[in-house]
Structure formats: C-alpha cells, structure tokens
Length: 263
Image (cartoon, rainbow, N blue to C red):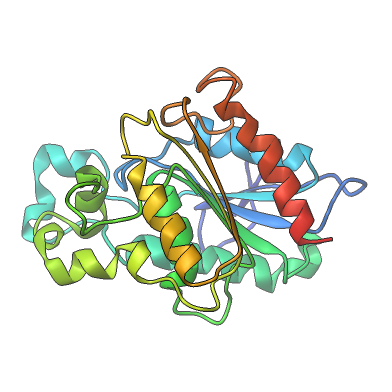
C-alpha cells in the first residue's frame, strides 16, 4: 500500500492511501474503486480526485487498483485461450483491501467498524460485490455505488464491455455466470446502507441499472438513498469540470450521508 506515493504494504502495491489530517480525522475509511469497464482504471477523476475530496472532509481514502482484463487483452486476444485477469480476481483484491485496512486500523487511526466501499461504473459493481459476494469475515459497513454497472443478465440494460471484462471472452455468454454477477439478484437481508447515484442521460451505462438496484434494495428492506439526476452523463467522478451543476451535487449529499451513518 502507498500513502502519498510511499509504499506501506509489502504484500501489494495496489492500494494507495490518502489519510485525513489528525485534527480532522473522523475515523471513517473508504476503499475507492475507479471505473473502467473491468478493463482499465480511471485513476484521475474516479480515483485520485475522489480520494482527495474524501480526505479533505476528514475521511480516510484508499484507492484500489484492482485487477482488470487490460486493454491489451482485446488487442492480442489472449483471453480467448482463458488467460488474463477475470472474476474473481477483482473481488479478491477488494476483499484483501478491506482486510488490510481492518487489520491495521489502529495504526491508521481508523475505526474498524466504519470502513466502507465507494466505486464508479464497473467499480460500482465491484463496490456492491464487496458485500454481496464477500467470502471473508471483513465486510464493509456501507456502500456507495456511483452510476454503477448492476445487471449482467438483463440484455436490455447490460453493459457488454464490463461483462466481458469481468467474465472473459467465453464466460460472458454463460447464463449461470451472468446471473451469478447480476447484483440485483443477490441482495442479502443483512446488506449495509447504500448510497446510490446515477443520471438519466448516462450514455454509457443505462440508467435502468440503478433502478434495478434501487428496486432490489427496497424489496429487501435495505436502508438506502437513491439520487437520480436528469443530467450529468457518466464518468464525472469527483471532478469539478465534468458532469453538470445538477450531478455535482452528489458529493455534498454523499458526505452528509456518510457522516450521518456514523453519528
């Protein structure tokens, strides 16, 4: 793990930490999962800028560079023969991140019961999987999927590129695998609170993905906040320049929501 560019964790260099100043530290931590169709990472708008925004609000942020297929996989086609990163590699990475932060909570000045996950687009899908598919004893206390990929089985709304990135060239057509990674079908009764955001004019991930998740959370009586904006598109992250004035409101709303959970 790195803090401001310096490695902390000998086990992996996938986690970069932005720790809040001691005087402002709320003790809350968030693992940040940038988007990129499970094929690359938007480390600027959905990684670094998100972490700096959280850090400025007293929240410790940890940007996760989870394993993805990589763009080269589609150029050279090596995944056709079954090689390359694919599910559950990215799930293992977010599980490892949560476990690491939990284990080192004292030295990082973090409350081990106040660790959440936030992600964007495909990273929003991974955010939900960090609880719904988690195979460890360390579970996130809250989840913030932002314009997330949700379904991998509903052909009306599936984002094919993310499904291919997660499952691989051949498994993307396996109905059982599609169902297994469709978040709306796997909301457990003990799911933690969720903060969900998307825009109706999203040109990349169809906005109905978030509506499917909202409906599933409601059906399972999971406390959650769903903000659906008319404008903003996709990929705005924590940028002050991308999206619209309407969609940029999500940051203020999200900080208030996170803090309200921990009062």
